[in-house]
Length: 604
Image 1 (cartoon, helix red, strand yellow):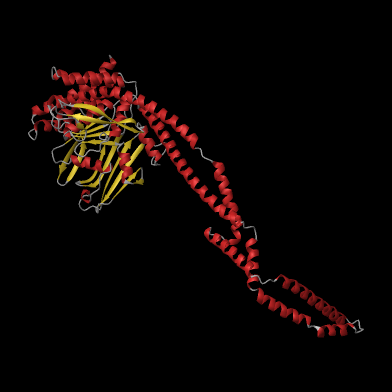
Image 2 (image 1 turned 90 degrees about the vertical axis):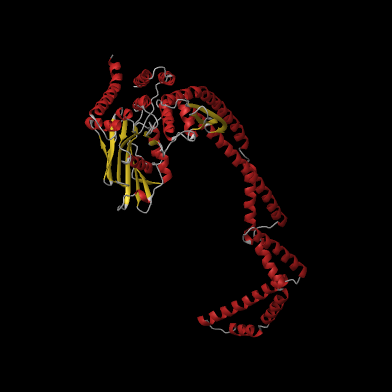
């Protein structure tokens, strides 16, 4: 397939040179691009195909269901017929800001959906599966956007609601529109660098560099975290040492708080206690009457059970009284009136209570809390840090990144000139006679390597080259983007390309060249081209016509007869003649010959 594409492109461009003898731009493009394509390693990039677009209640459209085919589809129609409606609907699917005025008057909402075949785009499939928006066995993607008459909108991917940001991220892999309202990745320096890497056969190397950079930076972050943790550990250790020193100075033991609390109470009320105990002892010592009663009862000679019980109880009671007197006297001996001792105990209690408040714990739990602090300190001192190992590893990772990045950088710079020359030649062949593209590099150490890249374009020798999206007019911008897509067609996954009047400002031979190149590029990806050039329209594999009747817009697929009539209108305007129809028929015959030539060569 690649050889057929190479041969077909070279043949088409050779025809263009034959029509303009001595055209150095066409010749340069032919040689440069054909050489590039023939030298490719055989890598065939994937692509996305728009299969169906359904529009309901959008602007002037009631209901419109458009089926798209592979290859090059051209869309034509009179000015004001509503070709912009198609682009506007696609724009909403790509994440354009929704407005209430896009809803058809009288309708409550506009509904736009598109079905894409993504079987050939592994990148997009993986992106959707990572976000759980695509089943493992699925190879189609359905995008839907609903806009209410109040201007609110909702977006869905395969039936799942998504944010506008998610929609935009996904849509950039589905469709790329070139025209007045572009949704172009090509203006993004990251995309520009990726295309260069793929052209240079360095896509795998670029991924490896990115992996090495992320690994290196990950270790750097671990080192920062380890250093911060080490600093925090040191601060914590200092605090723990200070706190444990307070506990050591206090020397508090288990149960001591309860003990000295009791002592403090006794010392605090020693005088009162002595008075109460003394009075109690005096009462207990004056139990002569009970003692005499016990003696008398015990002298009764009777074995009656009740008497025996009474004798036993009274005897036990007197014994208990005696025991109580003994214990009270022992307790009395322990009561000491000692103001100095009381002051010492109260001072210690105050220290204990202050320490408990400081550590927000109960006073009686301080010894256990002290052990907890000691265990933490021991753990910090024993754990140490893996900072040394990380520091040694990060040096190896940095070296690996820089070594691979330098090789990648050298390959980029080596292929950049060939890449730029091929695109420049294509630009010139597409009618930008003084068009030149260069790749500018800026040193910047990122996951993409040691530099960033930006495509700088010059369309007029009198002006300096500038960024792609700032130096060209609408038509030139589209043809420049087309030139880039042509050169990168075999090495990069392409979305469906939608071109809004890529032929604006050109005609004759250049328009024919544009059409032939689009037809050949369509072998790599689906192309939908809105055009006013009959030369381009005739070269489409499929032809759609936009027409307006009353207040509605329609799009229809043209058969051969209707296609000739439409081409004749494009050639002659409203005054279609037999001669213009003959020329239109000739254009279609030449387009058929363009398609048949590669097959004939293959059979030969």
